[in-house]
Amino acid sequence: MFGVPTQEVVVIVEARGCGKYSKQLYNLIGTNDDEGEVIVGPRDGSVQASIFDERKFVDNQLSSEQKVIFIGNPKFARDYLDALDSLATDQFDEHGIHIRIGGKHASVSVDSGGVTKETYWSFLDYAASRGCEFPDLLSALRDSTLPVSEESDGDRSGKNKIGVFFGGVAKGARGIVGGASDKAMLLRKASAIEDQKFQFAIRLFYLDKLRAFVEG
Image: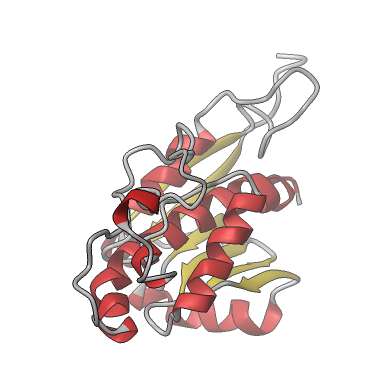
């Protein structure tokens, strides 16, 4: 029918353990979040998404015209990801977040480990500058001499301002026994830090990259 936009079909391929983030992107795609003339992410209703796990990706021969978004590093998609690394026409590599776009393929991943307290706090600052505030999971390392009453329950602003989208993320650590090493704290919080980064990476891809990808 005239006036009805053509939907672009995309396949989201999730690596093992990345189901949460593929569903996050899937749900964002299905959200009607445009505000009048302001387009948020891709145009509402312009994208139809399906999710494949690694096995389904292997079992289904996709057309070379099919647009595919890889979430994480699917084991059986290594060749595609290697090609993206060398042929990407648009990429983002900051704060342990990696986004690649090249032709019909895109990928979103984050580093696992290798975080210091300084690089983590730099990530929090960048995410906040983009409107996504997370609890500071390493707040106890900022100044171990501060009394508990002067800390902010894991939120650097003291307002627990993490927005509706990121509601429910666990609060940062408090009351750590004095003398606990930075390394020990980073090891304990590594999984939660990676989770924060992946949530933000998906949001960033949706807002900044997905529209150009599906319309290109």
